[in-house]
Length: 170
Image 1 (cartoon, rainbow, N blue to C red):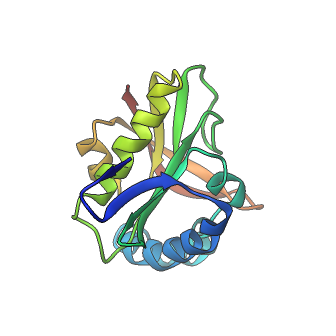
Image 2 (cartoon, rainbow, N blue to C red):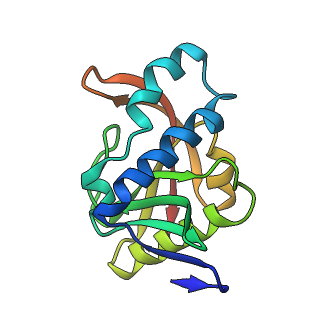
C-alpha cells in the first residue's frame, strides 16, 4: 500500500529486524514512561523493546516509511501471543510502535488500517490487541472496544506486564 508521494507501508523483511529493534528500543521508553511505574519499566523494557525476528519476518508484519525513514512498525498473526487464547477467525495485533518523534501524524492510524485490511483479506473476522496502557485511547479511536485488564507474561520468568485486551470486528 502506498499513498502520497513519500509514505509507504510494506511487509517487513529480515533486513528490517535491526531498524525495528532500534525503533522499539528508542520509542517504547519515551511513549510508556507516563503510564508505568519505574520498577515496571526497568524490568519490562529490556524484554518488550526488542524486535522478535520470527514476528518481523512472518509476512504479516509491516513497516511504514516516509522518504526511506521508518516511522512505524507492527503487524498481526493468527497465533495468539502470551496472554491470549486461540480463537478461530481471530487475529492478533502484534508489537506495534510509532516513532515517538512522529506521533499524531497519522502513521499509526495508517498502519492499523493496513493491518486490518491485511487480516480481513485472509478471512480473519476479528482482531484482538493486548494494548499497553498508553495505547488504549489510540486503539479505541481505531474502533477497538473492551477494556479487560490483563497481565501479559513476558520474558523467560513470565513477568506480569499490565495490558488491556481489546477487540475490533472486521
